[in-house]
Image 1 (tube, helix red, strand yellow):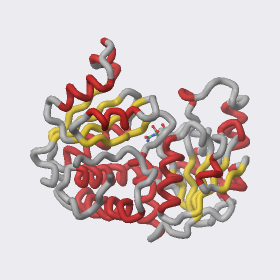
Image 2 (cartoon, protein in one colour; image 1 turned 180 degrees about the vertical axis):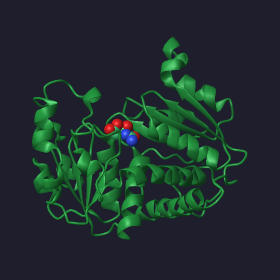
Image 3 (cartoon, rainbow, N blue to C red; image 1 turned 90 degrees about the vertical axis):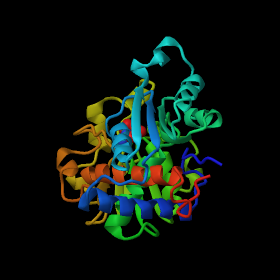
Image 4 (cartoon, helix red, strand yellow; image 1 turned 90 degrees about the horizontal axis):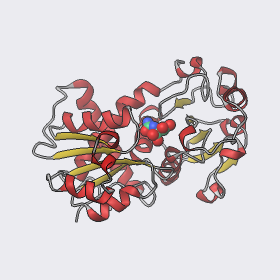
Length: 310
Ligand code: NCD
């Protein structure tokens, strides 16, 4: 049976560990050897993006190419989607070209799951609306594990626009499964109702959420998804909810600073925090390629013993 990666909800700790272990091997190849490896030789990967993206799309493309796959990219703005083709028809068209993996980003939550029902290819969710973004959370967890040696027992604070963030949701599912303690902090207008049901501690200030944190994950204000009027102005948002050097001291002195990107400099973090010693933001991008290499490898079935994602 084909396997998809649609989200981290319901994915077990053993499966996450298998992906992180695979990513560590891939990172070694990426940094220390000839980058071209044969794992996906004879396979094909297509990225199908209905939303803007820099790092996620390129990261999947590089991951596929480093492993020897044929890679094609479609962005909805320049495809037949503009001519009225449905998601299912587009996916079937890509299927008909013998794609092995289709990586989908879509503004509607659930779109990759719908595609998965109709596609022969394995589907990877690269971000669906406000639902999930599993490979982002996996690369965040990989970065944490690499720097701290473990995830279990750590305190992770997720800050800012939780309500509109698929990154927050995937991280909450994954981090909880891996035994971390998760707190969320941000304006009450950007906090989803019932978020505490996911087993997180909820605060209406970033400082409280950050107390003694081992890791902080700042989130971009997802203006494109917000109805107007959720906060007075960017300036006020950064004053009350942005993290600067002074606020960072609420976290542990060696706390890691993570951000999925793209960063709004001076809004969620000041430049001194983005470029500071605790920041792992650039390394997250490298780790993103390694994690996506591992995911593509596992889904194309060359390493069946490594993980079963369904
Ligand atoms: C995130 C996304 O698109 O969900 N970015 C990313 O994938 N690196 C977060 C964001 O857009 O702020």
